[in-house]
Length: 303
Image 1 (cartoon, helix red, strand yellow):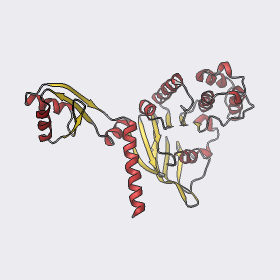
Image 2: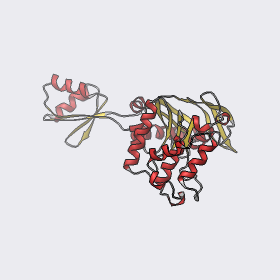
Image 3: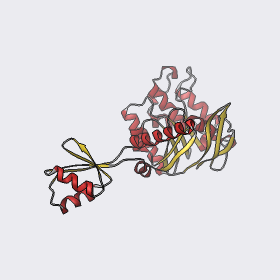
């Protein structure tokens, strides 16, 4: 697993990561979320040994990344798909990485085929589109057949088929026991891909929970209901303790689930024309959590 304990990073007076502790477990795709400037990229750099913490520790399977003798066999990472020598072909870029980590040459062909770059493997990477560069970065991360993957915004530049391919790949790898840490601002895709979420803001941990629990805890679920006797329905729901708001052609009902609304309607002989439960999306739940955190920080600063 990936583990951080009281991880802190300061740049002068700026605290980028602040006493951050969380675990990333095998068998799951863990989404790593936070607003711009939250400290996500700094945290990933600390995990991968590209920067040193001011305080705290981070390790992968019990060892700091810098102590791994052949890191690509343990951890595959993508932080910047464009971080490739522009004059080198994709094939030779991957071959260099393979040789530096004691990997067989055949792995180069395997991952080029896996990411769909076989036909352009001989082209210099300066000619690659953003999506092709991302695929090459993913190929490099997969090269050592690692059990841990750390990917920062891997869907940038990918088309719809590429995004679907990556989603399926990550879920298959997790199902096979891999540890996958995925950072992305694309909430709709994160909701489809991740099993667990770690959310930070201002370098601090806001949430560390499974996807469904996160949405439930930060959502305002409601039901839309329409009936022939609309005003009487309104009074019945209000008397039952619901918050009832106007909705086109009916009511938006908070604080009562759809089953309870249906039972109340039947009990009072009300004929319903619509009863639709609505579940919040990850995007809405995430926005609500981070807005609350921003408001809290603003009040604390004012005090």
